[in-house]
Length: 143
Length: 143
Length: 143
Length: 143
Image (cartoon, rainbow over all chains, first blue to last red; front, side, top):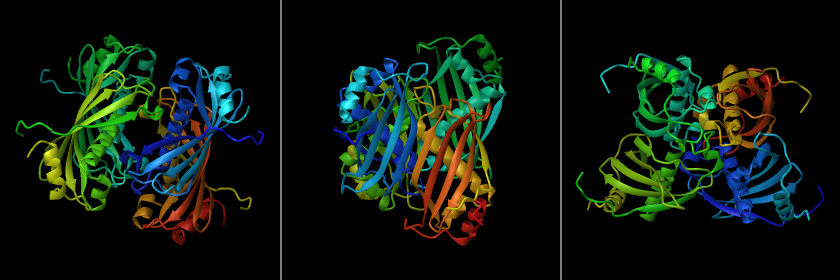
């Protein structure tokens, strides 16, 4: 990876649902990954790519690696912002990063990365079609 | 429906997961339906029917109506018993009922019913194949 | 219940998340209740009531009965509208109804009702404080 | 950290629920963390520690860092084994690792680690009480 910087940062707002809390009174940790998925899909939409259509064409990006560092708890009814970036794109891999921020005061709640492998309808590794790869590389500042 | 009684009651044990609680300190209400699904699948397994294989053969039972009455809250780490019965089987409909009980003291936590329509791979309404329908009718005491 | 009509209908938009789908290719049925909860909270917010603050004051509305009829499946990335109404309010009970509609074409996807009991911090049944009860009764057209 | 090896490996069995799948036909990635939580709690139970009681005494272990590498997809109705180990215990931190394996053929589906901070009822960082710390250190092979 060279030292290029992602050129696009998508910001998605969402509000914490009661269902997402646990008895500790904060959001259950696994649910953050659902929000990152929302951020990922909205970043693609901003780039003109519908993940729904991509999947219908037989091109899926399956999660192969995730990492999250939790800094401060998200709480019920909080308004949150997911800031998503494309960090890197290779022939068969796509790499995203995320910052989760509380909207009211900008507090950083979590930082995360996810790595995805491109697969086809039979779950076989395949190359990202150039019409997506080009868009993704530009958003990642790789071109 | 005549006054026949279900002949088979399946009992499935499960333990409440932390993820299933909410900040009220009890299990979030929607999660009970996940347990009823577990009970339903285990009842079928006891009848010799693998729902996984049924689906692979292109026969699915999609939920069309659910009802649940919550009597007493399920709590984190509780051991629970789901008692599932087949209430009725018709050409394209299957009807289950459930009792959720706390294992330690037999307290009834919830009662529920779900109705399912039989569909094929294209999500079109279809008839339940006789190899399943016969087994289901007998379990429901309809034969 | 007399034949009064709810005066307030809240409309909340949401988009189906990938996490909410199952391998049938549609949204898993239990997840609809999470959306109804979102609708309920947004209806209260429109009435000037923050459910978060209500809970912090020790007044919770716990689900005691739910019912849902599924008409047509919600799918990944669909934009949905939850139309929520307060159907009835009594001293210790609150009753909501919901219609779930696909935004793009207005198709009715589901209809539901939930009944809630008012409880305090110790999970004891209690009366809905008049500051909420009055607002809720007016929204339900009961005054 | 010295080169000591965890002495205790807990093995917990669970079966994939329909609710845990997504429209890719495999388990949604965030749900693996729910299983790791189950593995963690069962490891503690084998060590004679009830996490429920620990929490009731005001001692919680909140997640601060998670990592998971997905090797092969878990599918509906698969029987899985979660192998959980305590990797390290410090005054305010507890570190677990996990292997997720398909029971039928031993295939490794995922590897993960989670780090937890010890907090009290007010969500302040606190020391792990010695009655737990000693048990945990021995299980981690640190004594």
